[in-house]
Length: 113
Image 1 (tube, one colour):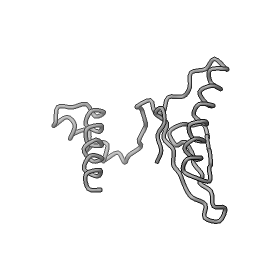
Image 2: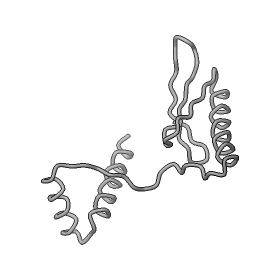
Image 3: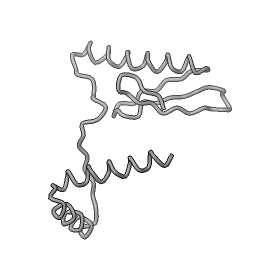
């Protein structure tokens, strides 16, 4: 993973073509880049972000923010009931409970790596 100005990129190596390919993963727009060396790849990533920001500025548009903080999750109605009850038992809204549970889970996973 690579990060620049809040934008995250996933990188893969193509052994056949002997080149790195990257894609920014936290935007709806598709932005890709490539390089034969890590230095070329990093520069291409930075250039791609800068080009994207410049393109938005030229059009008078705000660049897409990496994430809004909102997402919809569809679950089984029984699970919905169960987690709503769990949230209420803990004196939290469903959103706060889900946020805290996800944060706790991801923190535990990152410590086990």
